[in-house]
Structure formats: structure tokens, C-alpha cells
Image 1 (cartoon, rainbow, N blue to C red):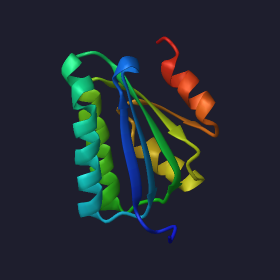
Image 2: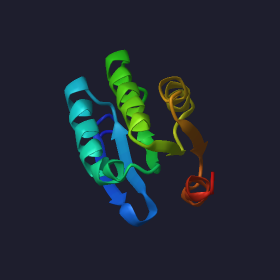
Image 3: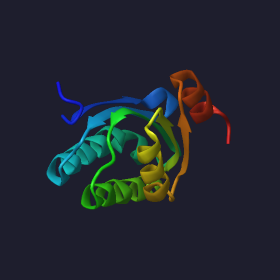
Image 4: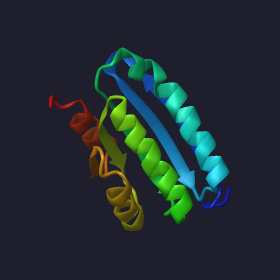
Amino acid sequence: MSVMTPTQSISADPDRAEIHFTIGGYWDLAGMKQFLFDLGEAAKPLMKRGEPFGALGDLREFMPQDRETSNAIRDSISAGTRNGLRRFAVLSASPLVRMQYRRIAQSVDVEFFDSAAEAIAWLRRPV
């Protein structure tokens, strides 16, 4: 599989009020919108509670995206914050992806990590 090929997985942990996802490759706008819809559907039970929740994104295989696609991600993160998203832990993104996410994730408390254990510890740390 090419590093450019879009890949993804999504899971929710309702007991911990967390959504976890892995995303890789380079996405076109239509594919990203479908992924973001699926992510929103997985987070819907957490949002319906009306309580804060966190997200863990594994972006180790993700590439910087074009402006349209990154704007769709930004809009999704903003919608998440309006519906309870409080923290977003990003696992081991490349320097360019980190820069892009710092720009588009300004509406949420976002941190970048090289290890899953550190990311999860930060995500679950009391606010």
C-alpha cells in the first residue's frame, strides 16, 4: 500500500468519554468529509451526554492535506468543541502535520506526543 493511500479506523470508549482514531495517507475532500461524518457518528453518543470528552488521533501515517481538506478538518474540530470536545491528543505526527494541526485546531486544547502512553496519560489527566 502506498503512503499516499487514505486509511482510517475509528473507535469510541464511552466509559472514558474518548474517541480514538487512526488516519493515514493523503485525502481528497469527498473522502475526508465521509471520514469526518463517520467520526461524528462515532462521537455522537458522547456528545449527547452533554459532558466533556477527549480525542486521541494517531496521525503517524497522515500527510499534510490541501487547503480545502484541512479547512474541512478545522470545521469538524470546531463543531466538536461546540459539542463537548475539550482535549485532542495527537500521536506522532510529522513536523508539517503538527504545524497544520496547530493552525486548524486552535479551538481545542491540542498536544502532540511520540508515545501512545504519554498521549493517553495527558488525555485522561484531570483538567
